[in-house]
Length: 320
Image (cartoon, rainbow, N blue to C red; front, side, top):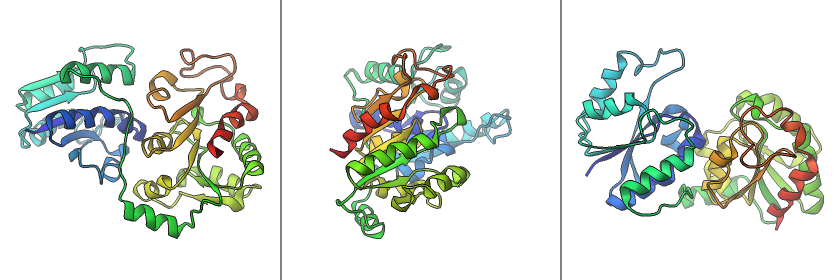
């Protein structure tokens, strides 16, 4: 049997969220699943050591409609999918475009959200579809496997020791509107260091150089290592060695969660119920006066209403 799962959302976090449902499908049918997904998810690096996944087919669509699968490129994609001769398709969206893709690709058994579904909750919709088709409850906990030899090598290379609490620190996010104040991250880390010596692994890329430099030049800088020159795949064994995560709602949050770390995640401009409640590993910090239900996009003065003390009171639990 050959199965394809279609997930068109572009982020690393989206890949992680849906990976648990895809694993359940692979387990039910006792075969790995192939996925159609966007390149920005870094699926080839993240799923490299995960036997539940077979082929990764990258979906090339862009906001300016210049991707090779945009416009008439849709038929190019149909030809590409058709040659794999898939038996089943699970489509994790409500778009008619992807249903037509599956039909024209000759896939006989197609499972999808209700066409035109509005106000989609990422987790609930995927869980509902998967459980309906499989006829059983499925877990929303994501699990990503990393080669143990790589984990051991990273431990030696980066001198990751139990003398310290090793914390993944994510001061950036997919948009500036999701980024908590860097000064407050530094202040929180200073307080943690006073309780127990910590090493902080700055989960940020080259585009975040200004944030990285600010942290490296601060009082905690001597205890920091930056991920800026590493690929996502190279960061995974380092993260696996760490004790916890502290940061914004970013791809590194979801990677850390899927690698088994306890995570303290700061939310003030993304929906907590979709991205913060799917795993027991995530503790959410939200603005004062808000609830999990009310913490969504573009809250007025959202980041300002999250204090150092509030974050610290959760983050200190990572030191246990």
